[in-house]
Amino acid sequence: MSFKDLKVERVEGELATALLKWYPSHKRGFIKIGQKKWFLPYRYVKNGDKIYNFEIRPDDTWIFSHPRSGTTMTQELVWLVANDMNFDKAQRKYLVERFPFLEIGAILDDHIATENIPGRVNTEKYSIEFVQNQPSPRFIKSHMSFELLPTVINSTCKIIYIARNPRDVVVSWYNFMKMLTHFQYQGTFEQFCNDFMNNHTVWSPYWEHVKQAWAMRHRANMMFLFYEDLIKNLPSNIRKIAAFFDKTYSDEQIAKLEEHLKIENFRKNPMVNQPSPDNVISPDVFIRQGTTDGWKKIFTSEIEQKFSKWVTDNLKDTDLFFPS
Image (spheres, helix red, strand yellow):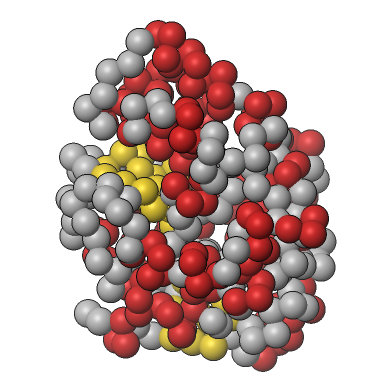
């Protein structure tokens, strides 16, 4: 199958009207694409083929996730483990340059995409071509589904997928979308939860996103991680990831990395917690609490009832589970 064979549906009618109300800066609207109807900004159509046909190298390392699943911490952890704990370089070079975000320029308008880049660097530098031309070994982040990036599935490169309890994901995603200029979400948390469960938030459907990776978890070049496990026992997971890269580290090195990744230190690290220029988004929004079960402070009983049914319905007949 080629990119042009993917079915593209423009979101129209009442849903399009509602979405424009929730996202006033996204005037071109949204699409649903592919067999699973992936929900993306309309701009994706322009560059989606470049992502679909992205050339993979055997020595690539990719991190995939649904947004707000602990991706940034996982990127920093993986990069340091794979690069011999090179803290000096990590403290001199932005994570977005060491571990670029593949599709940022493909889904955001040019003038908007720069708001996620330190120092308002020309967006073209962070284009798909910029990622493609990185020297090996490349480290690449993406929120795309495997259906829309099939070259990864057929490769032998290293793939790491990080998943998180969808209740915590939706809380973090809601707060993030409210603060981003290129989305400026105007709805309520309850409305956002409904859209999330109905697959009308960007990079949805959530369950299909996670399940595609879960089905691949036994591949030799694939590692599936849960954010909850990372938080609960970081040293053990550092060793697990090190083994994935055929690396061995001392207890002292692992302790240093653990300290580096502590949320209070992570928030203060400008190389990973890059707020956009002109205070469009503050560091405490880009990297928030870094905890688990924060949803319990936000969910109403009505939202939890709906969410619980949604989770149960989507987990039945699967062996997928989220750590408590």
